[in-house]
Length: 139
Image (cartoon, rainbow, N blue to C red; front, side):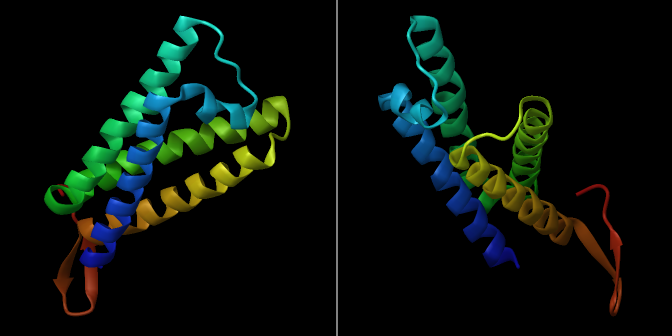
């Protein structure tokens, strides 16, 4: 399970790094999939901050966390994916169905949330006796 956790965190980290680098280079291309037009310096700066800067740092932390702090890196993914899932579902309820690109990302975020929750649970549960487990709340 520890090897799978490292692989998962590294793959997610590389995906974050890819989004970060692509957005640093061409923020308009990244948001074009959701029909956004960045026509001011403020809009460009905001997308570079969120999709480039934040994603790049999250990606670097996931790769680092895979080897040094997997439970913490999974916690970050739980918060990240959970926030996106809540935001997207509320958007569907309030605004209606988005395009297929956004729905695909919703599926990816639900998957990331579910796997991250499971792996974090696996890492933080503590064996008590043969065949039984108790949750380690301090991990």
